[in-house]
Amino acid sequence: MKTKKITLVLVAVLLLGTLASGATAQARQRETISMWFWGAPPEHQVTMNEVLVEPYNASQDEYELVIEFRNTVDNDIAVALAAGEGPDIVYGSGPSFVAPYAAAGKLASMDPYSEQYGWQDRILAPIYESGTVNGELYALPNSLNTLGIFYNKAVLEEYGWEPPTTIEDLEAIMDAAMEEGLYASVTGNKGWRPVNENYTSLFLTHMAGPEAVYEALTGARPWNSPEIAAAVEKSAEWYQKGYLAGEDYINLNFNDAVQLLAAHESPFFIGPTLVFQFATQFFNEESGNVDELGFIPFPSIGDLPYPLYTLGTTASLSINGSSEHKDAAAAIIDRMMTQDFLVQMTERWPGYWGVPVKELDVNPDDFQGLSREYLIAIQDMITAVNEGHFGYFSATFFPPATQQEFINVDTVWLDTASVDEFLTRVDEVFAEELEKQMVPPIPVPGE
Image (cartoon, rainbow, N blue to C red):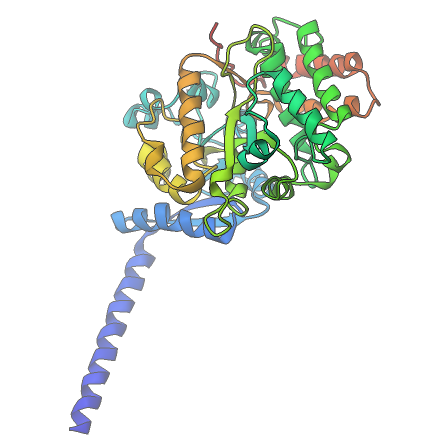
């Protein structure tokens, strides 16, 4: 009897080994489709694998998608593309990143796939246009991103403040908050100086206005025009009044800032919607404060419409010009350009997957926690963008050197350069990039 049991066990082991060997052989037979992604936190990597990688790999037997999460992805991609190598799916930082690589032949035209999958009919027109170079599509953004006001509802209620809809109300609350010993707002550029451009983009949209910025980006207006100068001056006024976390601006990153917001140290965090992904650490069911976080559009100044959204994206997806599997790479990108993918990712990872579809047919009340607040923000933004009520995020629409000049706005904030000196420099740099055709397509704003 004992011998019979041993024999059965050996047979089972051999059978499992044979099956495993077969599965391994099958996996070996698949062609790998590679994608490098930023070094997201472990829980977000799990979400990416369970929502994208595993269903794709289970859907067919010809390819296997492999995602590498790299903290140095931007540099790694640049080095690889320069050498004619790199992953099949190219993760980039947006249109400004795409244009030079497209011009150098490092990226594949996505026009045939756009026609095959109907992307132009599904993606928000200004976003689709931003991914084109000389009329050909080279990138699709993975998510919308805009700038607005995160606010702690409990703090506003404690002090009797209402969510502000005008710049006067916003500044009055920030003044009152500082008098109470709170931060006016929390934010900071510790470890990431490009945070500075959030605040120039914000005032370019809501003070100079989309029309003035559109004209500057198309060379029809100088950057040192009065409207744009006033917007830069306003950003300096905010910094110098301490509205941007005061002296702690250089000591805080987004995680620190949102933690302070959750700790009732400020009524506001003014920044990009991608911060929802950081906020889940501090506003959640376990802490019992998930309902305290709200998000509203930034107030418009003067006669500009409200709500008005600074239009930006978090990243872009392209196809490597050297890839031997361009069709498969395009099919994977297509899976990501859907409402279904937006919903599945946002349920578990709010803040980074506001896929730029033209219509978002979901009921935010069907979602829990910060996913609901994020979907409301994205749904409202899509409606506004379809109506033409958008401005331009410098990280998305400005050519690289001009974008860098706007990151240097802290020279104005710290009084080491005047607004005129700063914008004269911007004018010079932008003129060179305009002549070299490095300015990405600029969508026309609505009236």
